[in-house]
Image (tube, rainbow, N blue to C red; front, side, top):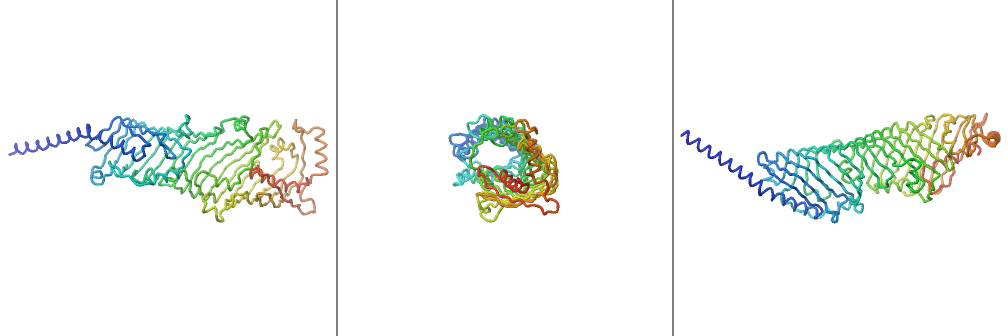
Length: 538
Protein backbone atom coordinates (compact mmCIF):
# COMPACT_ATOMS: atom_id res chain seq x y z
CA UNK A 1 0.00 0.00 0.00
CA UNK A 2 2.85 2.36 0.87
CA UNK A 3 4.56 1.45 -2.41
CA UNK A 4 1.42 2.21 -4.35
CA UNK A 5 0.98 5.61 -2.63
CA UNK A 6 4.58 6.49 -3.36
CA UNK A 7 4.11 5.59 -7.02
CA UNK A 8 1.01 7.83 -7.23
CA UNK A 9 2.91 10.69 -5.56
CA UNK A 10 5.84 10.29 -7.97
CA UNK A 11 3.43 10.16 -10.89
CA UNK A 12 1.73 13.40 -9.82
CA UNK A 13 5.08 15.04 -9.12
CA UNK A 14 6.44 13.91 -12.46
CA UNK A 15 3.31 15.14 -14.22
CA UNK A 16 3.69 18.53 -12.56
CA UNK A 17 7.36 18.68 -13.56
CA UNK A 18 6.53 17.68 -17.13
CA UNK A 19 3.71 20.23 -17.20
CA UNK A 20 6.01 22.97 -15.89
CA UNK A 21 8.74 22.06 -18.35
CA UNK A 22 6.22 21.92 -21.20
CA UNK A 23 4.75 25.26 -20.15
CA UNK A 24 8.21 26.79 -19.88
CA UNK A 25 9.12 25.47 -23.34
CA UNK A 26 5.82 26.81 -24.69
CA UNK A 27 6.50 30.20 -23.10
CA UNK A 28 10.08 30.21 -24.39
CA UNK A 29 9.60 29.09 -27.98
CA UNK A 30 6.09 30.26 -28.87
CA UNK A 31 4.41 32.58 -26.39
CA UNK A 32 7.50 34.79 -25.98
CA UNK A 33 7.54 35.46 -29.71
CA UNK A 34 3.79 36.05 -29.67
CA UNK A 35 4.12 38.58 -26.81
CA UNK A 36 7.02 40.27 -28.58
CA UNK A 37 5.01 40.69 -31.78
CA UNK A 38 1.95 41.94 -29.89
CA UNK A 39 4.02 44.53 -28.00
CA UNK A 40 5.46 45.77 -31.28
CA UNK A 41 1.96 46.06 -32.82
CA UNK A 42 0.54 47.74 -29.73
CA UNK A 43 3.27 50.36 -29.47
CA UNK A 44 2.91 51.14 -33.17
CA UNK A 45 -0.89 51.43 -32.83
CA UNK A 46 -0.92 53.49 -29.64
CA UNK A 47 1.74 55.89 -30.97
CA UNK A 48 0.15 56.26 -34.41
CA UNK A 49 3.20 54.52 -35.93
CA UNK A 50 5.48 57.18 -34.42
CA UNK A 51 7.49 54.53 -32.55
CA UNK A 52 8.92 51.15 -33.38
CA UNK A 53 9.71 48.66 -30.60
CA UNK A 54 12.50 46.17 -31.17
CA UNK A 55 13.85 43.54 -28.81
CA UNK A 56 16.49 40.97 -29.67
CA UNK A 57 15.27 38.43 -27.13
CA UNK A 58 12.24 38.10 -24.86
CA UNK A 59 12.10 35.37 -22.25
CA UNK A 60 9.22 34.52 -19.90
CA UNK A 61 10.11 32.51 -16.79
CA UNK A 62 7.41 30.65 -14.95
CA UNK A 63 8.99 30.29 -11.50
CA UNK A 64 9.23 32.94 -10.29
CA UNK A 65 7.01 34.64 -12.88
CA UNK A 66 9.12 37.20 -14.70
CA UNK A 67 9.73 38.71 -18.14
CA UNK A 68 13.21 39.54 -19.40
CA UNK A 69 13.86 41.73 -22.46
CA UNK A 70 17.35 41.78 -24.01
CA UNK A 71 18.73 44.50 -26.33
CA UNK A 72 15.65 46.75 -26.29
CA UNK A 73 15.29 49.72 -28.63
CA UNK A 74 12.42 52.20 -28.90
CA UNK A 75 13.02 53.97 -32.21
CA UNK A 76 11.00 57.02 -33.36
CA UNK A 77 9.94 57.78 -36.91
CA UNK A 78 10.83 61.48 -37.17
CA UNK A 79 8.71 61.95 -40.29
CA UNK A 80 5.59 60.97 -38.31
CA UNK A 81 6.49 62.79 -35.09
CA UNK A 82 3.49 64.80 -33.86
CA UNK A 83 4.47 65.51 -30.26
CA UNK A 84 6.41 68.33 -28.63
CA UNK A 85 8.97 65.76 -27.42
CA UNK A 86 10.18 62.67 -29.27
CA UNK A 87 12.11 59.90 -27.51
CA UNK A 88 14.73 57.35 -28.53
CA UNK A 89 15.63 54.79 -25.87
CA UNK A 90 17.92 51.77 -25.59
CA UNK A 91 18.40 49.21 -22.80
CA UNK A 92 20.76 46.25 -22.63
CA UNK A 93 18.24 44.47 -20.42
CA UNK A 94 14.82 45.07 -18.86
CA UNK A 95 13.78 42.49 -16.28
CA UNK A 96 10.25 42.57 -14.82
CA UNK A 97 10.47 40.41 -11.70
CA UNK A 98 7.92 38.96 -9.28
CA UNK A 99 4.94 39.45 -11.57
CA UNK A 100 1.46 38.92 -10.12
CA UNK A 101 -0.19 36.02 -11.96
CA UNK A 102 -3.59 36.62 -10.35
CA UNK A 103 -3.67 40.29 -11.39
CA UNK A 104 -2.85 39.33 -14.96
CA UNK A 105 -5.30 36.42 -15.21
CA UNK A 106 -8.30 38.11 -13.57
CA UNK A 107 -7.79 41.83 -14.27
CA UNK A 108 -5.41 41.82 -17.25
CA UNK A 109 -3.09 44.09 -15.26
CA UNK A 110 0.64 43.53 -15.55
CA UNK A 111 1.87 44.13 -11.99
CA UNK A 112 5.60 43.81 -11.21
CA UNK A 113 7.04 44.19 -7.75
CA UNK A 114 10.60 44.63 -8.98
CA UNK A 115 12.30 46.03 -12.10
CA UNK A 116 15.94 45.77 -13.08
CA UNK A 117 17.30 47.83 -15.98
CA UNK A 118 20.78 47.54 -17.43
CA UNK A 119 22.62 50.36 -19.21
CA UNK A 120 19.63 52.65 -19.95
CA UNK A 121 20.05 55.47 -22.48
CA UNK A 122 17.37 58.05 -23.36
CA UNK A 123 17.64 60.69 -26.07
CA UNK A 124 14.94 63.38 -26.22
CA UNK A 125 14.29 65.58 -29.25
CA UNK A 126 12.23 68.75 -29.13
CA UNK A 127 9.95 69.64 -31.99
CA UNK A 128 10.05 73.48 -32.11
CA UNK A 129 6.91 73.55 -34.30
CA UNK A 130 4.68 71.75 -31.77
CA UNK A 131 3.80 72.83 -28.24
CA UNK A 132 2.98 70.59 -25.27
CA UNK A 133 -0.58 71.95 -25.39
CA UNK A 134 -0.92 70.83 -29.03
CA UNK A 135 0.37 67.38 -28.05
CA UNK A 136 -2.20 66.98 -25.28
CA UNK A 137 -5.05 68.05 -27.59
CA UNK A 138 -3.98 65.58 -30.29
CA UNK A 139 -3.71 62.73 -27.79
CA UNK A 140 -7.17 63.31 -26.32
CA UNK A 141 -8.95 61.27 -29.00
CA UNK A 142 -10.83 57.96 -28.57
CA UNK A 143 -9.24 55.36 -26.33
CA UNK A 144 -7.72 52.21 -27.80
CA UNK A 145 -8.17 48.99 -25.86
CA UNK A 146 -4.79 47.26 -25.53
CA UNK A 147 -4.61 43.51 -26.20
CA UNK A 148 -1.85 42.47 -23.80
CA UNK A 149 -2.74 44.26 -20.57
CA UNK A 150 -5.02 47.04 -19.36
CA UNK A 151 -2.34 48.49 -17.11
CA UNK A 152 1.36 48.22 -16.38
CA UNK A 153 1.95 48.72 -12.67
CA UNK A 154 5.43 48.79 -11.15
CA UNK A 155 5.35 48.79 -7.37
CA UNK A 156 8.82 50.27 -7.01
CA UNK A 157 11.86 50.64 -9.17
CA UNK A 158 15.07 52.67 -9.21
CA UNK A 159 17.00 53.85 -12.24
CA UNK A 160 20.60 55.03 -11.79
CA UNK A 161 23.08 56.68 -14.14
CA UNK A 162 20.73 56.90 -17.10
CA UNK A 163 22.47 58.46 -20.10
CA UNK A 164 20.21 61.42 -20.91
CA UNK A 165 20.65 63.75 -23.88
CA UNK A 166 18.22 66.50 -24.91
CA UNK A 167 18.35 68.03 -28.39
CA UNK A 168 16.54 71.20 -29.45
CA UNK A 169 15.57 69.70 -32.82
CA UNK A 170 15.84 66.47 -34.82
CA UNK A 171 18.75 67.84 -36.86
CA UNK A 172 20.95 69.04 -33.98
CA UNK A 173 24.22 67.20 -33.44
CA UNK A 174 25.17 68.77 -30.10
CA UNK A 175 22.82 68.18 -27.13
CA UNK A 176 21.44 71.18 -25.27
CA UNK A 177 21.35 69.13 -22.06
CA UNK A 178 23.28 66.04 -21.08
CA UNK A 179 23.57 63.99 -17.90
CA UNK A 180 24.87 60.56 -16.91
CA UNK A 181 24.93 60.94 -13.12
CA UNK A 182 21.36 60.64 -11.89
CA UNK A 183 18.89 58.63 -9.87
CA UNK A 184 15.16 58.18 -10.48
CA UNK A 185 12.83 56.48 -7.96
CA UNK A 186 9.22 55.44 -8.70
CA UNK A 187 6.60 53.89 -6.44
CA UNK A 188 3.24 52.61 -7.73
CA UNK A 189 4.17 53.64 -11.25
CA UNK A 190 1.22 53.13 -13.63
CA UNK A 191 0.89 53.32 -17.40
CA UNK A 192 -2.64 52.95 -18.77
CA UNK A 193 -5.14 54.69 -21.05
CA UNK A 194 -4.59 57.97 -19.18
CA UNK A 195 -1.50 58.36 -21.38
CA UNK A 196 -3.96 59.13 -24.17
CA UNK A 197 -4.80 62.43 -22.43
CA UNK A 198 -1.23 63.61 -22.54
CA UNK A 199 -0.06 62.16 -19.21
CA UNK A 200 2.68 59.56 -19.83
CA UNK A 201 2.33 57.97 -16.39
CA UNK A 202 0.94 58.21 -12.91
CA UNK A 203 2.97 57.59 -9.77
CA UNK A 204 2.33 57.81 -6.06
CA UNK A 205 5.97 58.71 -5.58
CA UNK A 206 8.41 60.07 -8.13
CA UNK A 207 11.81 61.43 -7.08
CA UNK A 208 14.51 62.46 -9.52
CA UNK A 209 18.05 63.59 -8.81
CA UNK A 210 20.44 64.71 -11.54
CA UNK A 211 24.05 65.62 -10.81
CA UNK A 212 26.43 67.69 -12.90
CA UNK A 213 24.26 68.50 -15.89
CA UNK A 214 25.05 70.99 -18.63
CA UNK A 215 22.50 72.88 -20.75
CA UNK A 216 23.47 74.70 -23.96
CA UNK A 217 21.23 77.57 -25.15
CA UNK A 218 20.22 77.76 -28.79
CA UNK A 219 21.74 81.24 -29.15
CA UNK A 220 25.21 79.75 -28.64
CA UNK A 221 26.06 82.58 -26.23
CA UNK A 222 25.41 80.86 -22.90
CA UNK A 223 25.49 77.53 -21.15
CA UNK A 224 23.79 76.60 -17.89
CA UNK A 225 25.37 74.21 -15.43
CA UNK A 226 24.21 72.80 -12.11
CA UNK A 227 25.83 70.41 -9.68
CA UNK A 228 22.52 68.96 -8.52
CA UNK A 229 18.85 68.93 -9.57
CA UNK A 230 16.14 67.10 -7.65
CA UNK A 231 12.35 66.86 -7.80
CA UNK A 232 9.88 65.04 -5.57
CA UNK A 233 6.18 64.35 -6.11
CA UNK A 234 5.56 63.57 -2.47
CA UNK A 235 7.35 66.65 -1.10
CA UNK A 236 6.13 69.01 -3.89
CA UNK A 237 9.65 70.45 -4.15
CA UNK A 238 12.00 71.17 -7.06
CA UNK A 239 15.58 72.09 -6.11
CA UNK A 240 18.72 73.21 -7.91
CA UNK A 241 22.16 73.55 -6.31
CA UNK A 242 25.12 75.55 -7.62
CA UNK A 243 23.38 76.78 -10.76
CA UNK A 244 25.46 78.89 -13.16
CA UNK A 245 24.57 80.81 -16.31
CA UNK A 246 27.92 81.16 -18.04
CA UNK A 247 28.73 83.29 -21.11
CA UNK A 248 30.69 81.36 -23.74
CA UNK A 249 32.67 84.40 -24.91
CA UNK A 250 34.93 86.95 -23.24
CA UNK A 251 33.76 90.46 -22.35
CA UNK A 252 35.41 91.86 -25.46
CA UNK A 253 34.11 89.18 -27.83
CA UNK A 254 30.58 88.72 -26.49
CA UNK A 255 28.96 91.76 -28.11
CA UNK A 256 30.79 91.06 -31.37
CA UNK A 257 29.34 87.54 -31.49
CA UNK A 258 25.89 88.90 -30.60
CA UNK A 259 26.20 91.45 -33.40
CA UNK A 260 24.98 94.36 -31.29
CA UNK A 261 25.48 96.14 -27.98
CA UNK A 262 24.03 94.09 -25.18
CA UNK A 263 24.53 93.09 -21.55
CA UNK A 264 26.79 90.10 -20.96
CA UNK A 265 25.47 88.26 -17.90
CA UNK A 266 27.21 85.86 -15.58
CA UNK A 267 24.82 84.46 -12.97
CA UNK A 268 25.37 82.02 -10.11
CA UNK A 269 22.87 80.73 -7.56
CA UNK A 270 23.95 78.58 -4.64
CA UNK A 271 20.42 77.25 -4.00
CA UNK A 272 17.12 77.54 -5.87
CA UNK A 273 14.09 75.87 -4.28
CA UNK A 274 10.55 75.80 -5.66
CA UNK A 275 8.21 74.79 -2.84
CA UNK A 276 4.57 73.71 -2.88
CA UNK A 277 4.85 73.20 -6.63
CA UNK A 278 2.97 70.86 -8.96
CA UNK A 279 6.05 68.75 -9.78
CA UNK A 280 4.25 66.56 -12.31
CA UNK A 281 3.11 69.56 -14.37
CA UNK A 282 6.57 71.13 -14.04
CA UNK A 283 8.39 68.06 -15.39
CA UNK A 284 5.91 67.15 -18.11
CA UNK A 285 5.01 70.56 -19.54
CA UNK A 286 7.34 73.09 -17.93
CA UNK A 287 4.49 74.84 -16.08
CA UNK A 288 5.63 76.56 -12.89
CA UNK A 289 2.93 77.05 -10.29
CA UNK A 290 4.46 77.39 -6.82
CA UNK A 291 3.79 79.15 -3.56
CA UNK A 292 7.43 79.99 -2.86
CA UNK A 293 10.66 80.29 -4.82
CA UNK A 294 13.78 80.64 -2.67
CA UNK A 295 17.02 82.01 -4.14
CA UNK A 296 20.03 81.90 -1.86
CA UNK A 297 23.31 83.69 -2.66
CA UNK A 298 22.33 84.90 -6.11
CA UNK A 299 25.27 86.60 -7.81
CA UNK A 300 24.67 88.61 -10.99
CA UNK A 301 27.54 90.19 -12.90
CA UNK A 302 26.54 92.30 -15.91
CA UNK A 303 28.93 93.89 -18.41
CA UNK A 304 28.19 96.25 -21.32
CA UNK A 305 30.64 97.52 -23.95
CA UNK A 306 29.36 100.82 -25.34
CA UNK A 307 31.96 100.77 -28.12
CA UNK A 308 29.82 98.22 -29.95
CA UNK A 309 27.02 99.59 -32.11
CA UNK A 310 23.63 99.67 -30.43
CA UNK A 311 20.60 98.77 -32.53
CA UNK A 312 17.93 101.27 -31.60
CA UNK A 313 14.62 99.44 -31.31
CA UNK A 314 11.77 99.85 -28.81
CA UNK A 315 12.10 97.54 -25.81
CA UNK A 316 9.34 95.46 -24.24
CA UNK A 317 7.80 96.62 -21.01
CA UNK A 318 8.31 94.41 -17.91
CA UNK A 319 4.59 93.57 -18.07
CA UNK A 320 4.87 92.44 -21.70
CA UNK A 321 7.98 90.38 -20.97
CA UNK A 322 6.11 88.54 -18.19
CA UNK A 323 3.24 87.77 -20.56
CA UNK A 324 5.69 86.47 -23.17
CA UNK A 325 7.24 83.86 -20.84
CA UNK A 326 6.83 80.70 -22.98
CA UNK A 327 5.35 78.61 -20.16
CA UNK A 328 2.69 79.09 -17.50
CA UNK A 329 4.05 80.75 -14.38
CA UNK A 330 2.34 81.67 -11.12
CA UNK A 331 4.58 82.15 -8.07
CA UNK A 332 3.15 83.74 -4.94
CA UNK A 333 6.49 84.81 -3.42
CA UNK A 334 10.14 84.88 -4.50
CA UNK A 335 12.55 85.19 -1.59
CA UNK A 336 16.11 86.34 -2.32
CA UNK A 337 18.77 86.43 0.38
CA UNK A 338 22.50 87.18 0.75
CA UNK A 339 22.85 88.16 -2.90
CA UNK A 340 25.09 90.40 -4.99
CA UNK A 341 24.76 92.40 -8.22
CA UNK A 342 27.58 94.16 -10.08
CA UNK A 343 27.12 96.29 -13.20
CA UNK A 344 30.24 97.06 -15.21
CA UNK A 345 30.23 99.42 -18.19
CA UNK A 346 32.94 100.34 -20.70
CA UNK A 347 32.11 103.85 -21.94
CA UNK A 348 32.66 104.74 -25.58
CA UNK A 349 36.33 105.55 -26.12
CA UNK A 350 37.25 104.67 -22.51
CA UNK A 351 40.28 102.53 -21.72
CA UNK A 352 38.82 101.07 -18.53
CA UNK A 353 35.34 100.17 -17.34
CA UNK A 354 33.46 101.62 -14.39
CA UNK A 355 31.55 99.51 -11.89
CA UNK A 356 28.77 99.84 -9.34
CA UNK A 357 27.86 97.07 -6.90
CA UNK A 358 24.89 96.16 -4.72
CA UNK A 359 25.98 93.96 -1.83
CA UNK A 360 24.05 91.88 0.71
CA UNK A 361 20.78 92.01 -1.23
CA UNK A 362 17.67 90.68 0.46
CA UNK A 363 14.44 90.95 -1.52
CA UNK A 364 10.86 89.73 -1.76
CA UNK A 365 8.99 89.57 -5.07
CA UNK A 366 5.25 88.87 -4.96
CA UNK A 367 2.54 88.34 -7.56
CA UNK A 368 4.61 87.04 -10.50
CA UNK A 369 2.23 85.43 -13.00
CA UNK A 370 1.25 85.33 -16.68
CA UNK A 371 -2.14 83.76 -15.95
CA UNK A 372 -4.54 85.78 -18.13
CA UNK A 373 -7.34 85.51 -15.56
CA UNK A 374 -5.15 86.91 -12.79
CA UNK A 375 -3.49 89.65 -14.86
CA UNK A 376 -6.86 91.04 -16.00
CA UNK A 377 -7.68 92.19 -12.46
CA UNK A 378 -5.74 94.34 -9.99
CA UNK A 379 -2.81 91.93 -9.68
CA UNK A 380 0.62 93.56 -9.56
CA UNK A 381 4.20 92.45 -9.21
CA UNK A 382 5.80 94.07 -6.20
CA UNK A 383 9.50 94.09 -5.36
CA UNK A 384 10.79 95.11 -1.94
CA UNK A 385 14.56 95.00 -1.49
CA UNK A 386 17.39 96.07 0.81
CA UNK A 387 21.07 96.26 -0.15
CA UNK A 388 24.36 98.07 0.41
CA UNK A 389 25.46 100.33 -2.46
CA UNK A 390 29.20 99.84 -3.01
CA UNK A 391 29.12 97.86 0.24
CA UNK A 392 28.47 101.13 2.08
CA UNK A 393 25.16 102.99 1.71
CA UNK A 394 22.14 101.12 3.04
CA UNK A 395 19.41 101.05 0.38
CA UNK A 396 15.73 100.25 0.87
CA UNK A 397 13.67 100.22 -2.33
CA UNK A 398 10.27 99.30 -3.75
CA UNK A 399 8.97 98.70 -7.28
CA UNK A 400 5.39 97.87 -8.27
CA UNK A 401 4.16 96.90 -11.73
CA UNK A 402 0.41 96.59 -12.52
CA UNK A 403 -0.19 93.50 -14.67
CA UNK A 404 -3.45 94.60 -16.32
CA UNK A 405 -1.51 96.43 -19.05
CA UNK A 406 1.24 95.76 -21.58
CA UNK A 407 2.54 99.34 -21.34
CA UNK A 408 5.50 100.48 -19.25
CA UNK A 409 3.93 101.60 -15.99
CA UNK A 410 5.42 101.37 -12.53
CA UNK A 411 5.92 103.06 -9.18
CA UNK A 412 9.38 103.37 -7.68
CA UNK A 413 10.60 104.64 -4.32
CA UNK A 414 13.82 104.31 -2.33
CA UNK A 415 15.73 105.55 0.70
CA UNK A 416 19.55 105.48 0.92
CA UNK A 417 21.10 106.09 4.32
CA UNK A 418 24.40 107.90 5.03
CA UNK A 419 27.51 106.89 3.04
CA UNK A 420 30.72 108.52 1.72
CA UNK A 421 30.08 109.82 -1.79
CA UNK A 422 33.60 108.98 -3.00
CA UNK A 423 32.60 105.30 -2.85
CA UNK A 424 30.90 105.96 -6.22
CA UNK A 425 34.20 106.84 -7.91
CA UNK A 426 34.69 103.34 -9.34
CA UNK A 427 31.78 104.10 -11.67
CA UNK A 428 32.15 107.90 -12.08
CA UNK A 429 35.86 107.96 -12.95
CA UNK A 430 35.62 106.02 -16.20
CA UNK A 431 31.98 106.64 -17.14
CA UNK A 432 31.42 110.30 -16.19
CA UNK A 433 35.04 111.56 -16.27
CA UNK A 434 34.91 112.94 -12.76
CA UNK A 435 35.62 111.86 -9.21
CA UNK A 436 34.22 113.02 -5.89
CA UNK A 437 37.06 114.36 -3.75
CA UNK A 438 35.00 115.03 -0.66
CA UNK A 439 31.41 114.73 0.53
CA UNK A 440 29.01 112.64 2.56
CA UNK A 441 25.47 111.70 1.69
CA UNK A 442 23.31 112.06 4.79
CA UNK A 443 20.13 110.77 3.19
CA UNK A 444 18.74 110.31 -0.31
CA UNK A 445 15.02 109.71 -0.67
CA UNK A 446 12.87 109.68 -3.81
CA UNK A 447 9.53 108.53 -5.15
CA UNK A 448 8.10 108.71 -8.68
CA UNK A 449 5.49 107.31 -11.03
CA UNK A 450 6.48 106.27 -14.55
CA UNK A 451 4.44 105.56 -17.68
CA UNK A 452 4.99 105.17 -21.43
CA UNK A 453 5.80 108.88 -21.89
CA UNK A 454 7.46 110.28 -18.79
CA UNK A 455 8.29 109.88 -15.10
CA UNK A 456 7.28 112.37 -12.44
CA UNK A 457 8.03 112.65 -8.73
CA UNK A 458 10.26 114.29 -6.16
CA UNK A 459 13.64 113.69 -4.56
CA UNK A 460 15.33 114.90 -1.40
CA UNK A 461 19.12 114.62 -1.28
CA UNK A 462 20.74 115.78 1.96
CA UNK A 463 24.54 115.89 1.91
CA UNK A 464 27.46 118.04 3.04
CA UNK A 465 30.99 119.14 2.01
CA UNK A 466 30.68 117.99 -1.62
CA UNK A 467 33.65 118.65 -3.85
CA UNK A 468 34.31 117.14 -7.29
CA UNK A 469 37.23 116.92 -9.68
CA UNK A 470 36.83 116.91 -13.48
CA UNK A 471 39.07 114.45 -15.39
CA UNK A 472 40.51 114.55 -18.87
CA UNK A 473 38.51 112.20 -21.09
CA UNK A 474 41.58 110.66 -22.70
CA UNK A 475 43.98 110.42 -19.75
CA UNK A 476 41.55 110.26 -16.80
CA UNK A 477 43.76 112.84 -15.06
CA UNK A 478 43.06 116.26 -13.59
CA UNK A 479 45.21 118.35 -15.97
CA UNK A 480 45.47 122.16 -15.92
CA UNK A 481 42.39 122.70 -18.07
CA UNK A 482 40.39 120.29 -15.92
CA UNK A 483 41.64 121.99 -12.74
CA UNK A 484 40.17 125.32 -13.95
CA UNK A 485 36.85 123.61 -14.76
CA UNK A 486 36.81 121.87 -11.37
CA UNK A 487 37.47 125.14 -9.53
CA UNK A 488 34.72 126.97 -11.44
CA UNK A 489 32.13 124.23 -10.86
CA UNK A 490 32.95 123.80 -7.16
CA UNK A 491 32.97 127.58 -6.56
CA UNK A 492 30.15 128.96 -8.74
CA UNK A 493 27.86 126.10 -9.83
CA UNK A 494 27.80 123.15 -7.47
CA UNK A 495 25.81 123.42 -4.26
CA UNK A 496 28.32 121.97 -1.74
CA UNK A 497 25.76 121.17 0.95
CA UNK A 498 22.03 120.60 1.20
CA UNK A 499 20.63 122.02 3.34
CA UNK A 500 22.86 125.05 3.63
CA UNK A 501 23.34 126.52 7.06
CA UNK A 502 20.11 127.93 8.50
CA UNK A 503 18.16 126.97 5.35
CA UNK A 504 15.61 124.22 4.69
CA UNK A 505 16.70 121.39 2.35
CA UNK A 506 16.04 121.92 -1.35
CA UNK A 507 13.80 119.30 -2.90
CA UNK A 508 14.59 118.09 -6.38
CA UNK A 509 11.95 117.61 -9.06
CA UNK A 510 11.93 114.30 -10.93
CA UNK A 511 10.79 114.66 -14.52
CA UNK A 512 12.19 112.65 -17.39
CA UNK A 513 10.82 111.98 -20.89
CA UNK A 514 11.14 108.27 -21.54
CA UNK A 515 13.40 106.87 -24.23
CA UNK A 516 11.33 103.93 -25.61
CA UNK A 517 14.56 102.16 -26.66
CA UNK A 518 15.80 101.80 -23.09
CA UNK A 519 14.70 99.37 -20.39
CA UNK A 520 13.39 100.29 -16.92
CA UNK A 521 16.80 100.33 -15.23
CA UNK A 522 17.96 103.12 -17.55
CA UNK A 523 14.54 104.80 -17.13
CA UNK A 524 14.90 104.66 -13.34
CA UNK A 525 18.47 105.97 -13.32
CA UNK A 526 17.69 108.89 -15.67
CA UNK A 527 14.62 109.77 -13.59
CA UNK A 528 16.69 109.90 -10.38
CA UNK A 529 19.43 111.93 -12.11
CA UNK A 530 16.86 114.53 -13.18
CA UNK A 531 16.03 115.10 -9.51
CA UNK A 532 19.70 115.11 -8.45
CA UNK A 533 20.62 117.78 -11.01
CA UNK A 534 18.07 120.25 -9.67
CA UNK A 535 19.27 119.56 -6.12
CA UNK A 536 22.96 119.95 -6.89
CA UNK A 537 22.40 123.18 -8.88
CA UNK A 538 23.50 121.67 -12.22
